[in-house]
Amino acid sequence: EFLYVYTILDVTELELLKTREFNQAKMASIGQLSVGLTHEVNTPLTIIKGNVELMEFDLFDLEDEHLKANFLENIESVKNGVKRIETIVSLLREYSSEMKTDDVSHQVVELNDAIFDTYQLLYSRSRFISNIYLNGELLTINHPPERDSLSAVISKSKLSQLFLILINNSLDELYSSTLPFEKRFIQIYTKKLIEKNRVLITVVDNAGGIDSDILKRLFEPFISGKEQSGIGLGLNIAKKIIDERGGIIKAINTDDGAMFKIEI
Image (tube, rainbow, N blue to C red; front, side):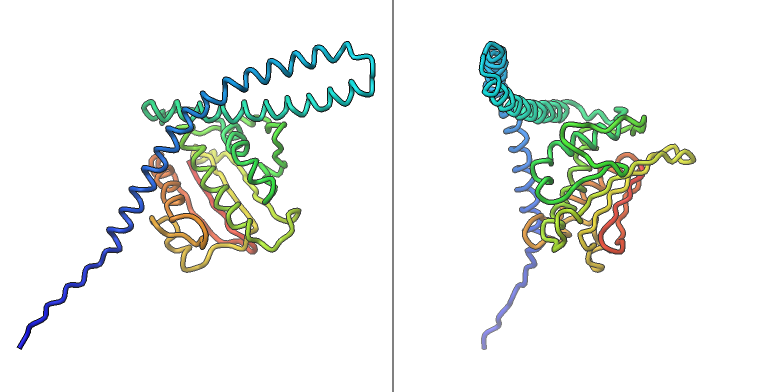
């Protein structure tokens, strides 16, 4: 007679750990790449900007007014593009610089500034998916919102990371929405909670909401309702950012979408 011994090994946790370590290494590489990218882009950008300004100056001597107007219009378009690249490079440099130093967890960060900075980074994607509003005002790339004196004591890079996670989540869901573009929205509201000496940030979309089974465990690691993207770490990271500041983050479903409420 033979005695067979079988061992069943659950490798799920090991595989999840490997996946997490791989993605952490990948994000670190992306961070290093962004540092080099900002330097490499800035040099040719300076050359382009200088030459465009010289071309614009030379065009004022052009006698054909119609032709001059067309050239100046095209140059203005190029200048706007250069300005857009400069903004992105500046933001990447700022975030990369802060990541290199000790975490500045006690910065006083203007909320509208942080939201608009994040919007600029996501603009190339969001403009094809959904409009984004701040306190009822449509955000546009060339017109930053007015400051309303609302601020939070938190690392600016972490606050921006929080907004990136939340807005990107909404964009992911709205991307597959059957609603026409003009009816899609991401609404961001900010409010001072005087009695708590905190600020309330609300991010709302109309992408259909979160599956009830996932909603209960939404902030746990490796929980994701996305079929095509995400490994379920984004909202877990968002919660850790808020927890570090002793704040609160929660998610609920509305009639036609999801709502995230953050107190910091």
